Length: 202
Length: 202
DNA sequence: ACAGAAATGTACTGTGCGGTACAAATTTGT
DNA sequence: ACAAATTTGTACCGCACAGTACATTTCTGT
Image 1 (cartoon, rainbow over the protein chains, first blue to last red):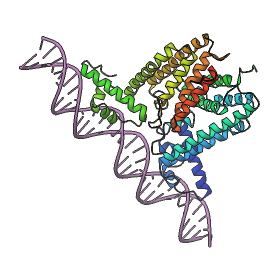
Image 2: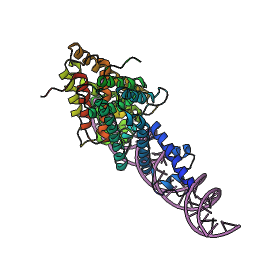
Image 3: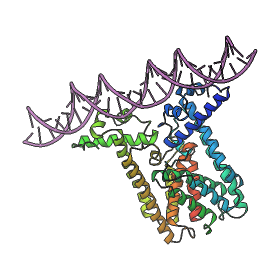
Image 4: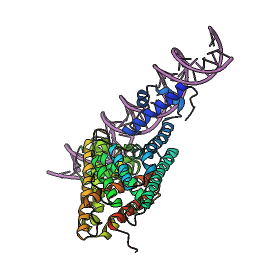
């Protein structure tokens, strides 16, 4: 960030730019998104962009931080209180429900991994820490599930958390490649079944 | 492919170009790789490239097909004969062993998913079919494991195959983001443990 | 050996996009 | 209300890279 906006209008502009960039980066990827598109979607010119951000990679860094917050916040209600097998299944359900066959299927965080240049060190660190926190929160929830005795015998909550996160990211990747959000559902359900026992009929 | 080379020298050149492109696309991504780099690494000018390929997206399509074959062939010995829990663990081990903390950690297929443009329809289809075949072969192996009674009770081989593949792709993604190939190992081991029971001490 | 074909190297062109400069408009404080 | 500062819009620059043209060299068959 180059200059913090001092007026309310300036702050609103920065927010609009950031929103637009998040949206475009998530949908088309970073490299496929031009600053003109960001300017157009946020209804600001490209001029402002350089007033508030040093350049594109600075904007990218800000977007990464924003997306990490968004994703973790969106999960927080479910993750923070996760303590039963049903809660885990609800989380899987929420995760799978977010994608539809119409839109491009890509995780707002996962899709960033391969698009950050080698020079975007700060953004890479932010993203890695985001994944780490996500995994930790999942693990904390799964430990509570374990304490209730609802985790498969001998299953390590930390390992299951890592597996769930990886399966989620990989599931979104494959669902995107095959244009089939069902793949994500299958994958998450498979792990839930292995770790928690057969899904109860509802 | 624009023109099939008629001489042995021409065929060798095409092979070198394809090799170089595979290498560079896998290491740096498609968009970050210039045709000059491909020409340089394959020790041919950019001129030849346009003799044998229509343009970059044509080269990309050829590389995708090549990578799909390479990856499936590399796994074939293990996948084709997979029939015990130990075989599954060996596959996991091989998968995890392929990455080290020094090199950039990216799956040659998974990293392509987000880099194919909307217009590269043929390449997308090839890639999707590749993932499908990979999953099928895993599932076939796991069915043989199930017949031996070495799969966890009630585990569906097809679902476990989907989970393993997704966890592999996601694991590589996360390992790359966190610069820690150990993440991939943890993930694969976690699923192996859930699906096959605790890892026997060796 | 020698014509014709294929393969190779180089130099050029056009374009898309990140970045910069600066003029015009709007807002803020007194 | 007015000056200073901040915000907004536009026009330009330069570079990197995909794509093209063409001259030169190396193969192939007879």
